[in-house]
Amino acid sequence: MELKKNPNISVDCVVFGYDTTTKSLNLLLINRYLESASGNEVLVDDYVLTGYHIYEHETLDDSATRVLKELTGLTNTYKKQFKAFGDPDRLKNEKDITWINNEKFNFRTVTIAYYFLVKTEDVDLEKTKHNAKWFPVAELPTLGFDHKQIILEAYEDLKIKCLAEPIIFELLPDKFTINDVQDLYESILDIEIDNRNFRRKLINKKYIIPLDEKQVGVSKKPAQLYMFSKDVYEKMYQKNYLINI
Amino acid sequence: MELKKNPNISVDCVVFGYDTTTKSLNLLLINRYLESASGNEVLVDDYVLTGYHIYEHETLDDSATRVLKELTGLTNTYKKQFKAFGDPDRLKNEKDITWINNEKFNFRTVTIAYYFLVKTEDVDLEKTKHNAKWFPVAELPTLGFDHKQIILEAYEDLKIKCLAEPIIFELLPDKFTINDVQDLYESILDIEIDNRNFRRKLINKKYIIPLDEKQVGVSKKPAQLYMFSKDVYEKMYQKNYLINI
DNA sequence: GCAAAAGTGTTCTCAGTACACCCATGA
DNA sequence: TCATGGGTGTACTGAGAACACTTTTGC
Image 1 (tube, rainbow over the protein chains, first blue to last red):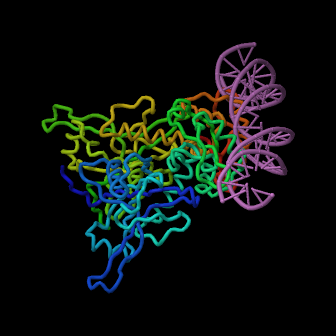
Image 2: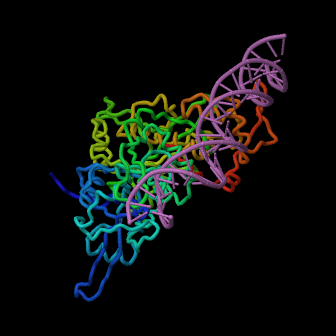
Image 3: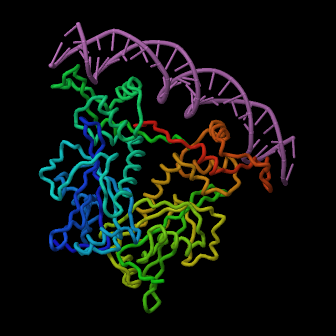
């Protein structure tokens, strides 16, 4: 198989995860670190999205899937191509130039940006290369290239999307409590939700299925666990033409 | 100004227009026509979206704007980048290959697809090159490349978008009737809407402003004309966090 | 006066919203 | 027994949906 990479086109992956313990929506970022030849000066030390050039034989989706797999080992995750970024000056900050000269990339690179929703528990940071770390979306480190903008646009898209499609469950463990879902919506949207109304609304959905299980190992009343059934959701889904302008 | 074009990256423009007379949502397509060297055989005769390679110094948005302007002369239109298409085989039908060999394009081209909403009345087809024509979205001609797929995805995006944002007015003349708006929604969404409910709903919006004018030159009761105020809309707009899954 | 489309009101139903207390459990 | 978070019910309000006839105009 030929692995000729296209110097002008890349994919970048915004990887969202959710930590149910800290109730924090996080992003998986990798460290961009470069020392001077002498080794006594740090030229670049910041964070970027994981990404890479596409190969000539690959579809864009396959490229993104490959890049995510190389970082996390995961393959069956929610993935959305949300925007292409192609400003001719998008990689031209001082540190970017230093970095690119070292890596021998091309300055004019259009990147097709994807975001992924993963279950934090599925990612083993010990196994990831590039010193990858989770950062709360509200407390991002210094970011290289135009990745701050890419992240913000991914986040905006996610906010809109999670209101209209049940993608939120991609970020939760298979078994979750109603309050987990509420906490996650509150984290993503940065809003407060009335627990009684939210609970009633969610429990009434046929695709939110109560399990014969409760939380274990909590030092309080253990909560009822639920699962999300994609099958049921898709069977009962019907288009809604409500004009809301 | 350097005009070096990037052989791997293009933009394609899905141009939507609406004909209030025939109540038809249309697409502006250009003819792709090629005869054999001898001139006695038509090698390619079908339709495609307008599009072109990006120039090295250009942003993606600027490329799309340029391409639209070259076809229609229009510059201030609603524009949305909605998806990148990059399947390695996307330009490899028999006719595409004939065409590309003639035009000396690159087979592996990733295209950044945009859609535009224009007022049909603003486009003078006599002035357009490439034999451009309007086609109802429901009756598209044979399309080259992967442009059928691009169009379908643009249309899907438009359907969703027009429910949530007042972009529909980009397709209507500055002065329109309530029934024009209803007809347009019905065309785009392929649904029927109750006129009384729709009318009440729309008239109650503060940004739908009744004019001191009625239709002229119609052989029936002339309808009240309205305009859309983007200013008022933006002032009163507030985010709605209704979770609708 | 007639054809054609514009314009108008009421009732019902359902979902969203606001709001405060008791309950079950583990420590 | 107490601290902690889980879980529950009711009344109000507003928007969507269903539904059929009268009015205005140009010809």
